[in-house]
Image (cartoon, rainbow, N blue to C red; front, side):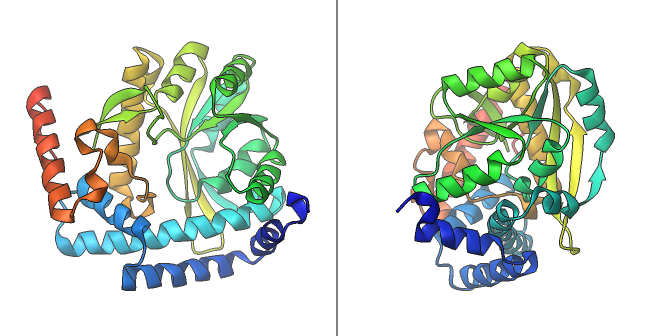
Length: 319
């Protein structure tokens, strides 16, 4: 049986065709079970990450943010299927309020290429169809291990005026070429690179971080915008488009990577409930490689030690 006729593929197609309000209801149900019975390792990682990143919270505020963030992350995952199953026209109509739209049109008009910086925040997949209606995009894509699921996602991504390239050197070269021709790419920068990268201060802790975004911007002279989308109560999304700090066009790729992470950190501090906290980001520090295997008290004590050492070395106040 071909992947497009498999049970998994047909099940994903069926799920993706369900109403958005049903996807959101199911997500709330799953999140309620997880928050009540604490049955998810993913939720445990998210809760630890929030405690690490925002140590200034009191216990009541921490629990409120953790509970809401887990619900929002579950909701985003369910919404991804709905976005992939909907038509481009439907997804475009769901972008109901756009803040900073002129920044995008001005950047496209320059014709220098455009790098869209999109953190793991809110429901980022909802934005693709809107941007693809104005510009073709080259997107780096890592295949999903399940073949049928991979076919399903590739079909959804490819119909959005997007060329998918692999997450390796050949894909990076293709992105460079397209940017130099005035094309557009989308990068999710807040992850740990498989190797290399740049150590940057992230919530007071130096972490190995991908410097691809900064390299793309600085070497191609493309413009850069910072994007995120937050769901609203109207079966749609509010989208925010912001110019990157002008410093990103100068200096080194390490400087640019720090600027990107500063903007992500500022966004998270503004809307901590909407960030996807489940990624084990803080093990990207060599001293914290096993932090997610420790008890909560041991993990936080180790983090505090690393943060204090970094603060002393850089003469920056610890959070």
